[in-house]
Amino acid sequence: MKIDFKHHQSAHCENGVVSNLMKHNGINISEPMIFGIGSGLIYCYIPFLKVNHGPAVTYRVMPGLIFKRFAKRIGVTFKREKFKSATKAKQRLDDNIKNNNPVGLQVGIYHLLYLPDHYRFHFNAHNIVVYGKEGSDYLVSDPVIENVAKLDEKQLEKARFAKGPFAPNGQIYYPISFPKESEIPYKKAIVKGIKQTCRDMLAPIPIVGVKGIRMVAKLIKKWPKKKGIKVANHYLGQIVRMQEEIGTGGGGFRYIFAAFLQESSAILNNEKLMELSKEMTVIGDLWRDFALEASRLYKNRKATTGSYDKVSEMLFELADKEEVFFKALKIAIK
Amino acid sequence: MKANEVPQDKSSLDSINQKELCYATDENGNYITTKSSGWTPKTIALNNAIEDIKERAEEAKQRVLNNETSPIEYYMELNRMDVTILAGYVGIWPFRVKRHFNPKRFKKLSDKLLQKYADAFNISLQQLKQGDLNED
Image (cartoon, rainbow over all chains, first blue to last red; front, side):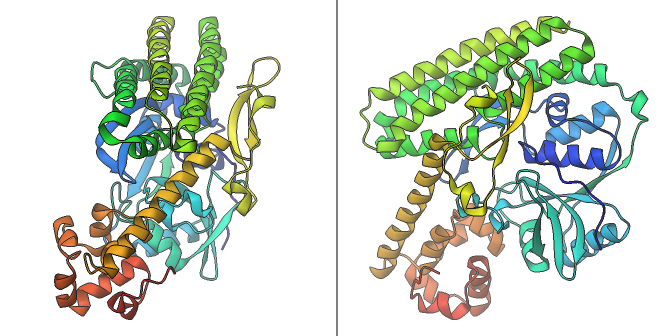
């Protein structure tokens, strides 16, 4: 059983799955649009959530949130189901395939054997689409890779019932009702999406947005003295990994956001957004410069404490740039 | 980032013959999607993370051999887990997992519970009990 489903590669899994499911149902919407309308961009330092023995730094909102906000703002209704029993979860998936309905699944990336070993960490908020079954193999469209893949029943079950933070509990989701393409409130949705991103990035919370960037910048200076070079390098590497992880579009999602602003500029007929898009591209480049500089530190593992100051300064500069940017963006859509 | 500046470095994506998609600008400054085979700073970060895990597993192995911890800790590191994640897979509280690191306690564990650990590590009950610490 194979559903006629078109696989498009995307930069990020969650946007990609939603975009692919929308396209399958006849609504042509780009990945950056979903990311922007769903207010995907953020910066957040989460010291209490340990990922691979280090604090988590995220450049996008909590898993599932982009998709939830996007659906609400566009007027699409999605159905979501979680399961306690693996048998039921499998049954429901098989039923959907029989009904010619490709579904999105939340899975643990550690169990996806078609990915390179280097990417297989215990991260549970990856998204894929299952669009068919051949014998006991499920046909998988994973938006971060170029081609479709296959997983057998056992492997898919493991991935769907991965454990740890953000455990997927076999979650599946699929759209059940759509607005007419002509009635989709794009303009309103875009403005809402941008407003929320501005609010998030300028939030008066010490670990979120611009303030969060400054906090990490301060910590980078402290880490080598407080935790030792080895741990400091491990943390720095972690920050870069999160920023440039497969499916971020690079520059900590800044390029995807810039692409979104560009597309929005045409839809809203707002020249200012085009300018800001270019500005965001420059900021994205600076994020990459930061990653490059940081990599010089953790590469040789024997850096002196002084060199951390430079990386920290770069991050402070980024915080300043983003503060100005998001204040300008807020005014631009008023 | 301009499309012609998108890095095409060697990375682990080569092992599965894949490239990743990214967003970059064309000569007119318009956004397009393009492919990248990888970027060295990221590859180093990934490699270091893997190296770290190997070191941790090796350390745990030594401590198992010195009878300072149980094979559970070693297999946990080998499977890139931490206590919280492992507790999730076994279905018990994290503090109990930590307790089971104690070699004496480990010896007294029931087969039923050990089987759950073995399943989490994808190894057989025998392998876990013998503690011969094979890499695979």
